[in-house]
Length: 209
View 1: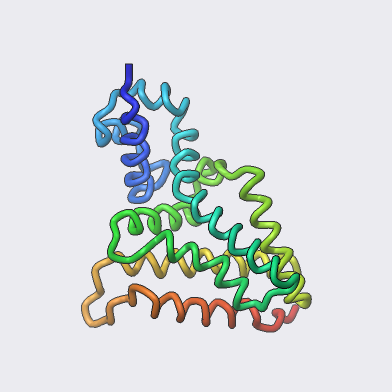
View 2: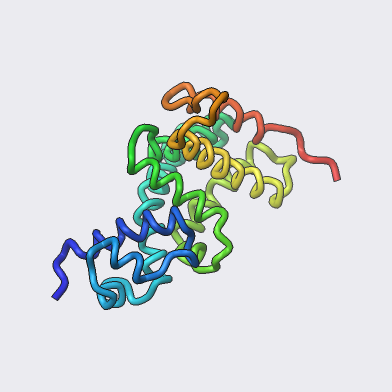
């Protein structure tokens, strides 16, 4: 019978390989080989490769979502219409906290979030549930109240842009610098710049038809 640690070993291996090679580019055998487990262990602990992908995504994203939810609760307890910058900070700040530069766990998280945003495999997006949908709708509602001129479609696009910009910035912070280019900023400076930039992007006038 599999030991209790086997499940975590499989999750760790799957997170690394999904982030590096995508969902379709990662085989169950490659995951179990890296984890030092047998093929049957994936079925025993997760049921399928798709369910394993869902478990990997939830393990990475749920703590970030919990911090985003807590930040929004704190803002709304003070005022029903927080400033745009405060909403951006509450949404994007936990992404920076969950993907710290100079940390291998942060590097894996940033790679995986980029994978979740960009991988064409349907299974990569199948992990979300009511909790994620509720959080997304709450932020959309809060932004809509303070940015009433934006259409729901453009607001959704801009909120997704916060995820993309933050994840790509954190991914770059873990890569080797390109020759001749300045190293990405790691730490509070990059966070402040991102919040300033994203606040301006969210606050921009609606796009003309």
